[in-house]
Picture 1 (cartoon, rainbow, N blue to C red):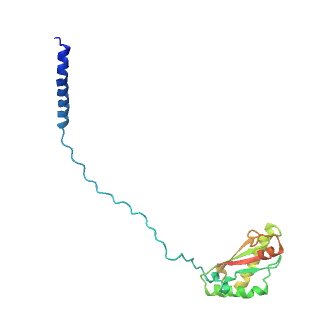
Picture 2 (picture 1 turned 180 degrees about the horizontal axis):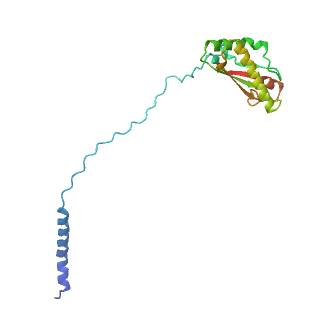
Picture 3 (picture 1 turned 180 degrees about the vertical axis):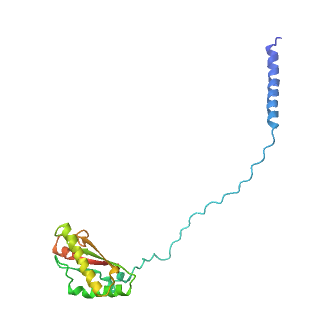
Length: 179
């Protein structure tokens, strides 16, 4: 059987329409799709709020030794060159601290011994320890329980004044009472 080109051209649109109708009909035979379940809107996180304090934050009060008008504010005991002997002018200061520690048994103090830069590192550590121990012995004699006091020597490692003069060295030979 021979078909002419003219006949093929005329039947092509009909054939194409039939194929499309079949595809369309096949696509319609499936079960209707269920509409998607509604999704509840997710709550958006609230934007962070910031509040401005009415007044600046106050520093935490650690104790009376922070008050310049309190006798406990003076916490540094100075020493002469190459000695651990406590000068008589510092006895009232040490007795004030001893009374405070004796009545406040929950408070502990560290006695930090320091020296100037002259001498070897080992010698200065030993001298700083001797100075801290002499302060400790005096405070224990004035009634402070030994478990409230500890000693620590920095030797020349923490100078109060980094200078290299007699005035700087005088400030570095000390024991600091740290609460």
